[in-house]
Length: 469
Image (cartoon, rainbow, N blue to C red; front, side, top):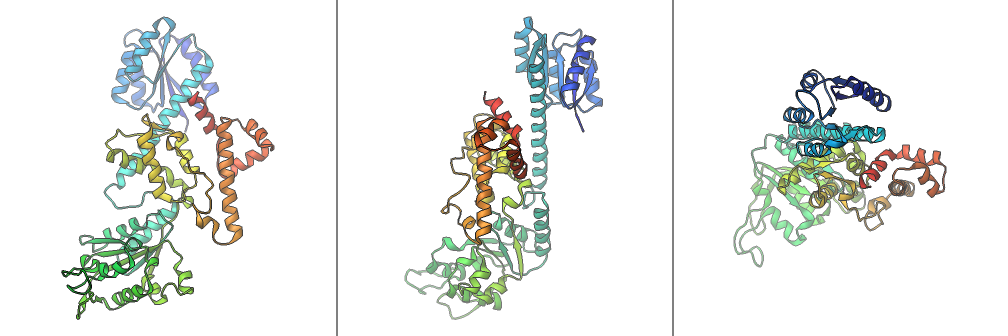
């Protein structure tokens, strides 16, 4: 469906001129009105994406029309047309919310450029509003943000698992939302009104983790001056989430297995066992099957945990969800920091989608937070992210890229290099593909092939160049 531009002028010759020019050069449809009053009627009957209005008209002039439009259609961009002698008045209209103004007689390129930018601006606002509505629709739910098939499948699995009381093992890379998945299972289960207790196993020293989980009695060890309930008992009736379960020691694995099998535990220093009614959900970013094969993880505990397995996908597998996830973080962070709601430009969204996210959603959240803090305007640009880290990480930053089979690791590294090289090249040439190909010492067709392969759009870099000029 084409976008629509409404032309408002009391001079029919001007309307015909603009209709021919805009209709020929831009992929839009045009509507016209010969007065401010009739323009408001057109807006009630049609969907309009940009208004081009003359300042001086009999009856309702352009500035009054602007105020009426902004009162009812706040996001609709209005471009004011005026004679050279009335530029000061046109500038004043900017304070009333005009997107821009152009002077008569028209410079065709200036006119078309202004209309293009206004349409892009309106498209961006509408896209952000749509994202905002979709986010708000999920605000009352502890749900994953995303609408890709992978996320829909994940949410569907979680809903099914939540209706049972089985032990669940959640696998996935760092930053993919394993704890969120656990909280979803808890919130959708019959245990939702009871405690949800999360334990980051590697964060607690090994010699303390056992007493933290199972509790202890006074005198059980030096420093145990009082009785203390463990986290299993704190989660009684609810859910205990054991994050990074692959990091616990073999002796503790054996004790945890007994609790899962017998549904009872014995605090340190106690002579009697206690029944526990706790659902256990465990998570790991390790390959536990390999750890079982090497003897680092007990096979009986592994299969006891893996009654049902759920995998949270990394961002590289759901790139279509990155804009929605980014806006979700943006909305939350602006509210958290007490700042006005900011917006992501199309270039910023493209940057986020094309970037490699080794830390997945957690890294994306940190980048959004940095941009919210350091961006000087309400619109966030690619440069506001201040990416000082290389797009192609070294082994110390990304061991998983360099692990595994050689061919697969090589493919990942080369893909990351291609994306970084082409992105930087186009940014340097401001989207000029011919110049970029020349500087790279390759045929234009070869560069275009790589751009299509990785979904890189040169037009985005031209826009960046225009806005920074």
